[in-house]
Image 1 (spheres, rainbow, N blue to C red):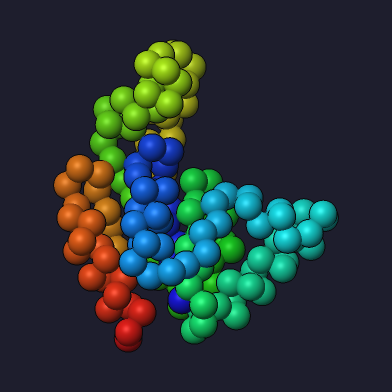
Image 2 (image 1 turned 90 degrees about the vertical axis):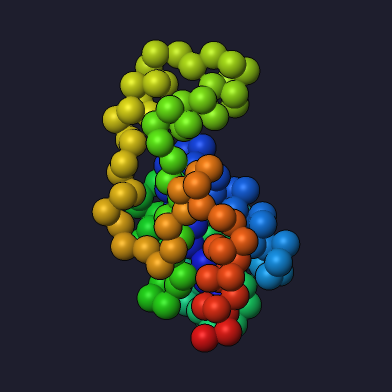
Length: 146
């Protein structure tokens, strides 16, 4: 099964991917990790798309996506999980990544991108600090069995 976890930076995508992979052994790809499949970007992208398409009913692959253009790599039949958070949570988490300092240009970029995934269709929506991750695991289990 392919599980696409997508959303803005600092919404808990990687944490969720690790939790899912701990319960359902999976290979995790993030962003452009597919470039490790070939030296040429176009060939690597094509190889990754074929790998994902072949895995829809086979091995478990989790693809963590923070850029909207990578959504097009998810094949039909992938389980789509949207990870979201309120803007203040995102800013706070991003500041922690930057050792407590959130420069104004970075804050402005986060503000501009906030909500950019909200209209993308998903099977499961995870809201940071609100959604029970065990319930998400139950949803993933049901999808794997169904």
